Image 1 (cartoon, rainbow over the protein chains, first blue to last red):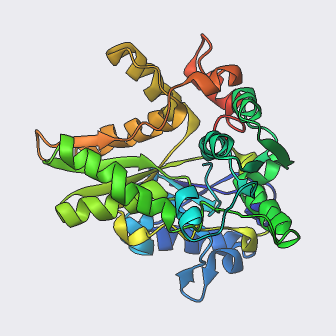
Image 2 (cartoon, rainbow over the protein chains, first blue to last red):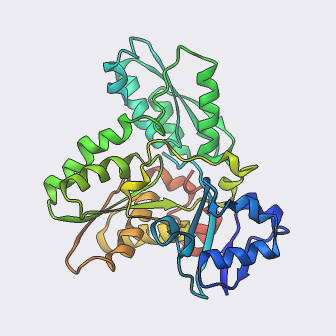
Length: 90
Length: 264
């Protein structure tokens, strides 16, 4: 199962869990599974069918916008990280 | 950004400047402001390293702390509030000022092209997005096949402690279309890369350099053999010594201890 890293701001929907494990061969499938088990995540992650603007999602550290978006393939050993968009240090 | 503001008549003798910064842009601004007679106030997360505070103080800048747990988002928000209440102050605002990427378009990229006309890929850290956007645009104008990668620091959980996602922030100067990819680098990988750079090349570099280098190494496998890759190194490691980032010991342990302060 892929491992999904949950940011602090969304842990209120996961009983405080910082990681969830879920099956799926694409990011969308994995997200469908975690939303099914933790329904509160749905509105936080999605606006309609798309990811919300201030959410960045990475598969094995790479932003999925530059891969295949929510259709990006996921391996069972992959880490999917959900991170809020924040200002970088500069 | 300062020269641009001067040219547009926004600054004059004794002007006051206000800027949100984690320190590095602030230090450069402070040096310029000191020599040109402007008074600078930096709004900075309270957990930034002592060295940056010392340098800012040396250059005569004032420091206003923003809450550590709000990261740079907090500095941006507080500085914007302060600017709103103080119409006479000038805020360059590196996160939204087109002069930021333009400086990289006009200086950083031409320097790279002069030294390495056949550069195949460019990697730089993501803070405001000014470096990757400006330098990336110019490099792609030189040769559209050049790949541009952003190395994005993965801050500690503390820094992502927003109350809700609507407090998220995407800097206006970042043009995501210039990038070929955006790859995050955690503290452990960045520190490991700085160690490797010290060991292999004898170079003592800061953590952002480590992040760029980690991404450069990663993307090498996507490029034809013999491709030339430029990884930007914004600074040496001196300003981070007091954080403990370079202490002896296991990089895994160090990085988990430092996760919330390393990039601040």
